[in-house]
Image 1 (cartoon, rainbow, N blue to C red):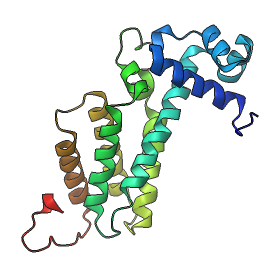
Image 2: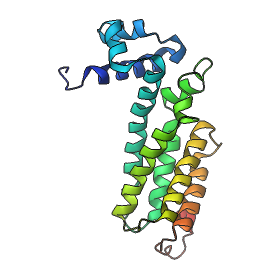
Image 3: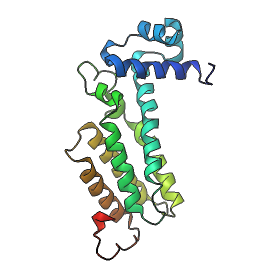
Image 4: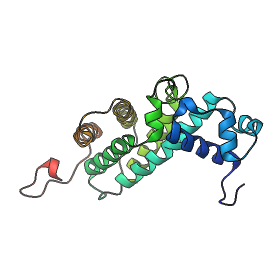
Length: 201
């Protein structure tokens, strides 16, 4: 464990994120990563396995940043679920526009490793994001049910779709997604203040 409390694996993954941000995923080699982190090449393989496994670890590490944004979005007033969802989705879409990992996902040469964890092999990402949203719904008293699970799954998959193929207006996309999800969840929302529309809330 390093002086900052991180494990060797965490340092390797963080180093991979740093190198990806600087030069792209295609330029990242295990040897270069080892030199950057200050460990042997064998240590990199021992800790993360193949480059494909490293790609999944990098994507999951980046997912942590996005889940922090989701948490911040749900800090909206307790009864206003639509506002919380809109804030969380908007924050995710805005972060996606600046994420070096996501830029690397769509870069030439990255598809073989970085793309699957967000598309064909996205099960772990979807499960983690769905679990976090479900926790916030639990905290707001939205009862668990098969219907709620279906809405959360739809919500997460839709947001990932927008992350991978951004719309021209993230805020408008977030408003639409939040409105649809709120209606589907059948949750009573506070009425807008006089003179204000739902979109202004």
